[in-house]
Image (cartoon, rainbow, N blue to C red; front, side, top):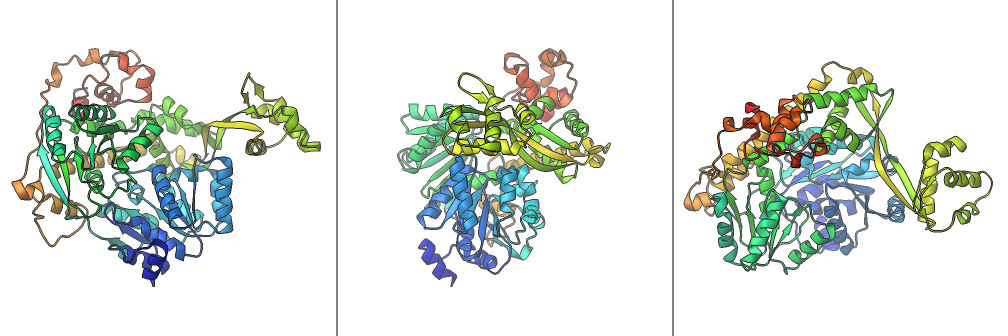
Length: 631
């Protein structure tokens, strides 16, 4: 009986809604999708399945923090699990590999980026895998709210590693995204388990709040119970610092939390919040995923969330213990331009895309790139550049082969002679060539592969393997950097005359979908219908009721979000003067000019030290589409 296994491994006497159905589907040999609200136990679906399946369960997770938390949980339950990621030492990776190979590790957790490592892919081909689990699986869909380009490759990996079963987990998937997930990963629609999105203990409130009254409104909310565990979500890192500082000045115990802080600082703040020593945390969306704190009583959106999916995920962190919790939006329309500008900033120009395509066509057979260099040369930011590369893969223009570090350096722990004298014959000559033909500085020695291979013919892999062995033995300290991505080029496809335009149109289609998503969110907050019912409907849930009786619409009626910012007409600005730094460089792309005026960074703007130019960001309070029209 499944309930016996649940009690044996996890100590639970009963399943949460949907869990038993999903686990049953998996152990019966089917693929499945679990769409449960945040905090309702999605992870248990793969954890219990894993101990009952014969071979490895491979879990793909988007965040290292999520992997760490779930590993800690599994270890406490006595379930053998491991991770493979860039934070592990050489010895730790070897230990994890040995456990997987021996079959003693039942669950292996990786990030999707791990699949770029050729040696990891070759390793997986030798391992029988029962189940591929994809956490935050909405990232597979281009129409998901947090689309991750590398997730598009997962269906290919599923076939490459001969994995017959998948389990997709997410809390936020609209009907079109569910359809995408089913199609991409070959899951039958009848094997999708949705437990519903409405949680009656969450009380949703929308307050139309002018920007200059937000702090007063926030103080009123938190002072009703200053010790209640509270997350205040903001859009920008600077806002997190300012708001946290103002709360502290008003006698509250609060701290900012954002991705711009050092890891150890963030970890300390998070630990204090989890332990109940820090009641209020003011955070960007860098905070929250994987936070398993059941007694959060309030989630306040100081700024507009990025989408309804983000909103649902973020409010879902409140009241996981079943207790009453309030979810308050201090809303106005002043921040809409910021949300839209994030979207437009990720759309590269047609000219930039064409540069990349031209670069590909010049490669003879294999195309080798450093992502940062390609970003700088093409003027495409890193994330959209990754998306472009995946688009090129899906259209068949390039095929990923492997990646490697181009630069290696080491410093000696023992003297060279001590290492060379450990070997004889051909191997001694090989080791001697590595040391003799590398470039020595005072402390570090840079590995010069071409020089070594010229004097001692061998392949690059033999050199790196030797260096890794010396590092493992404590004979040297080895560092590797500058990741190179290697692709095979399909010249017939890459040279298609319409390829650049086709790729550009894919970005434009995605851009339009994101803007529509923002507009749907605004319509939700301005809606005259029950907020809980609207949210459930958005995610495809049919509710037997139309009024929850506790949201702000049901209690006091709808609100209309307004703009408190008074802006001068755009035609009053000397646009040509503001654009002079770009004009002097010969830039004539209208989209690039609009990005410059709106303060949307690109590699080109960083090179010309945009922040020293008065024109950059001079129109950041305006909507991108309006600025584009004026340009």
